[in-house]
Length: 259
Image 1 (cartoon, rainbow, N blue to C red):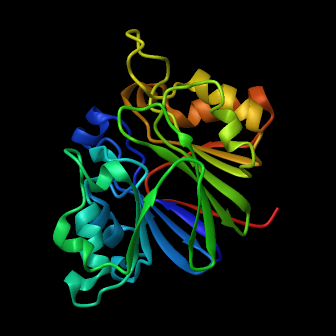
Image 2: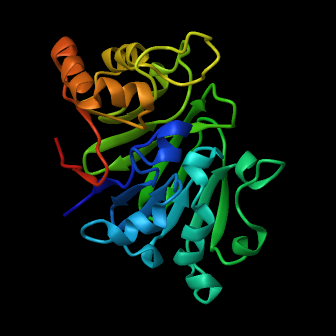
């Protein structure tokens, strides 16, 4: 298989994570030979070992965090420890926003940092490289933690991960070059309080309609999404928009093919 994405978990929000109604593990990317773990939430190391075929975390080239919240970073230290063989084989890179590394909500243990080949602090709308793989951050998302989406170059063009945020003007513009769009849709409908900074189905529809990616994958589901059935919602969006929209499931592999 060439470039691909494997969804080790598709849980979003605290109750789905706490009850493990969907696994809260991260997303594995294999791009141009680079092995990347994105947002290793709780259970990532276990799901690496249990998925088929297994993913050997000791062979990872990098870990990338989009923000510090526990459903995105709960297993980051275990995964970094595995990647570096407990420090006996220092290697690998970490990419993360500053809040993940410094301050009261820092999530990466100090002793592990010296085991890495490098740590790169992510900022808004910037360009980065991991070997042959280039990627860019989005504008800063509107979320309680410092959060950035990611846009990777791949065999299939630009593969974008639109992670946790509330909807705002300019959000879709930040992902307009996406050929494949993975979008976190925590809620079926906006929270009545208006204070929950996550996308709803209507928000996702607006983004997809403007960006018009070749392929869209919904993920990171909260309770209201699970109750409504993500696959049914994806089918409805496909029919409404005339675009390829799918719902991720735990263990799903998405092969990234040239158009």
